[in-house]
Image (cartoon, rainbow, N blue to C red; front, side):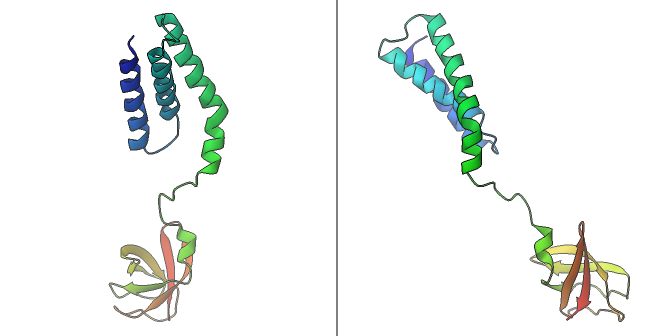
Amino acid sequence: MSWWLWVVIGILLVGIELLSPGGFYVIFFGLAALLVGALRGLGLANPLWLQGLLFSVLAVGSLLLFRQRLVKRLPASASGVDVDSLIGELALPVETIAPGAVGKVELRGSTWDARNGGVNAIQVGIRCRVQRVDGFMLTIVPE
């Protein structure tokens, strides 16, 4: 296979890794293809069987040796809201919520289900504090 085809395959694989949501698997195959393309371009990997062997060994070897280190070095991206950090936040009811009843509140630009943890009804627009988080259910009390 010609050197430029290895380079194109390598660039495509690296591009797929950049567009995918993570995992760091495909990038090692892309880098191995780029390296085989460079070796083929320099005339150091002429037979096709040698190119395939180099690609396989470089891809799998680098994956096994470097992936774990790479994953540990890069911070994990937060994919959602850390609901435990909502305790103490201010929420605004969008409907009247009777004591012990469940209603809707607005918090951080989203609508949440919330249980009234107080002894009086909470009216629309009254600022409330998040007292507890159970799954996606907030327990609120008037401020």
